[in-house]
Length: 199
Length: 213
Image (cartoon, rainbow over all chains, first blue to last red; front, top):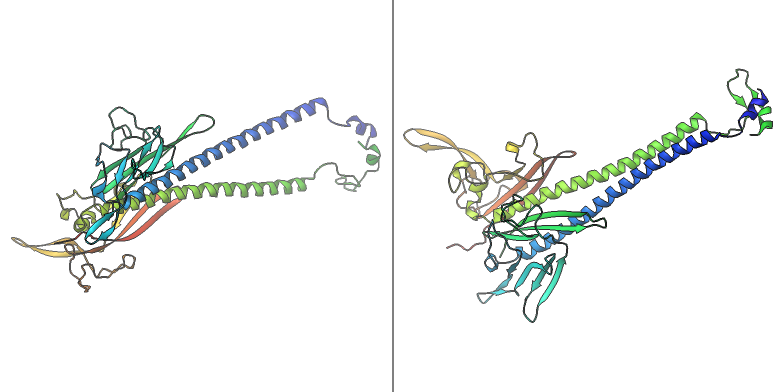
């Protein structure tokens, strides 16, 4: 081995260092981009999942409140293609001496700016009780416009973010929740179910 | 670079492997091992992420199917109880209104992809305690036609059959389509999931609580 050759290269040349740094920079940039995109996708997915869970929970609450009611006490009676965003009903507590004992009048609907879904008991009376179950209800149901037509093909015209329609003893409940994230993007989730009044 | 160390370097007789050299980098074996470990770690991580996504999709499909089955049963509760069998069997000739006007035993579920074998792309099916029976219809000449009967002696453990359906405390082989007071129902939904064929089964018992004359 020639010792002189050994002395020839004690380290990296500036070109080598620059190329290495450029390559490392490129790899790091790509890696950062991938991680950022994965983080964004994860955040989106989690936000959608949270909204879906919320919609399912609220829909279950509404459905279970209505399922125990008497179909004849439901007011107003609205059939497709019309719908209502507010429903009053009563629950039968049983029979005493041949007479049906009715529970306090209950109501489910929208209040405030139309984004709050509430459940109320004795609404408008002294013993009024109001509980807001959700405050992210959309103005209109997903895909619907206020134009007198059925834009989203669900057989209802101009239905709001919460809508009820009656068919015999069955009530179909439709609901769209909307949430706007920090970047101004809105996310919508729509759920629907049908329940038949048991009493 | 430490020149003195290089001076001490000796080579093996074959001139292949340097001996006595302090290693300044990684050997190819070390690199392969490191890369293998990285690859295994990455594949475990990928599999974990993929299985989470798969589980989420499966949960979504299950929720849609369960809700569809529940809604169908709610719709059945909304019908006249005595007409349920005629409405939800697959014989269009006994439909309460005109033939072919009843919903029948198959139904559509939005957001679930039908299997290749799904009739008419309908993923849901209603099962009732039914038996297809050949009966003679006396006309100008005797004709044998197939009828769907509600039968108490149908064997179907899932539906709790055989059992008394008309409340006379007897399990017989007659048709009880006109006098059943309880009706076991099984709703089955079969669909092509993102990760293969899937199904969901719901069994319930419907009865008539309306007072009769």
